[in-house]
Image (cartoon, rainbow, N blue to C red):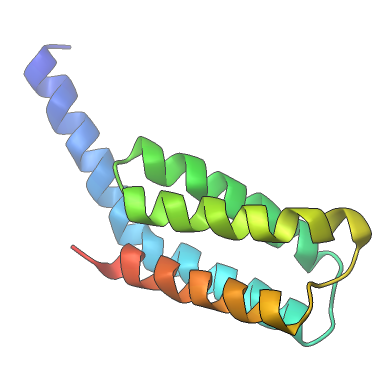
Length: 109
């Protein structure tokens, strides 16, 4: 594969990834809403896994804002995952702000 063909393929994969971001972000929102309503398992682990994956893949595809917000949200929840409980109200509000930042970053062009 020529360097130009490789670049075009990478750009196409990045565009596909960006088109799929709204669905990924909606899934995160759904997982969080389930947790906030009291359904800790299996949503807690799924949310942490999805945030971790999103942080890495977004960075790979050049969506830095999404990557940074996902990493911050993952870090915020990480200590509570080991305790099998949700953070307190202040940390939940902070998480919701990060989730909103994720959504904004994921829809920005």
